[in-house]
Length: 245
Image 1 (cartoon, rainbow, N blue to C red):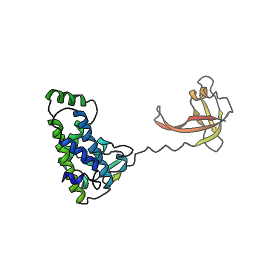
Image 2: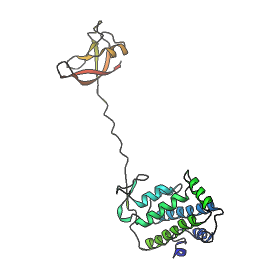
Image 3: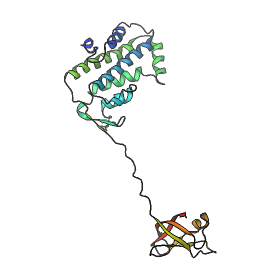
Image 4: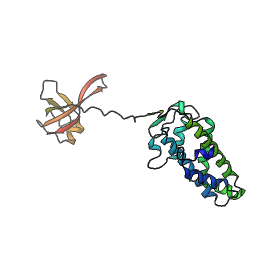
């Protein structure tokens, strides 16, 4: 059954040669190369998932994203929440069976490069047996056997949804009102804005008078905002921003 899956129809014939070589391993020599060979077969497996439209192309091009592909195929975390990987959510009907999902996590946790590999390498050097390698290799054989049966069952394809990123809507640009500066108070520093259109004069805070070097009669464009006048708890208008003309 495992030999049948190592064909161009399912994964690839080169994977069959890798598996044959791994079957012959009986010691811990070159153990790192053997772990790499297992990882490459898993990469071939994920590429085949994509070939059968069971995994979006973003997971295998330009390179195979092992962790993301595994999580997408598993579909959800232990608390039942759906994973979102590379902007996709995998719908439940085609999630991996629990045992196959467990095997893949186990295989990748041992065979991937990374800081944790120092612990794996130390274990192998200390125990001096090929049994860890053999255990993940036999898990891989089980996964490949299941994969062929799964493909032959004609599973539902493209069973996922694209999650569009949530973008904050930009606030609409505030309207600018044309007018001029009047009634500058030299002691307290504030002034008033007289709109060119009909309407009440609007308070200009002192910091804006100073910032824009406002003088009596100066034409400006003003952005208006509402604020609470605390003394009497009343809504009033004031100039929020100024563009000088």
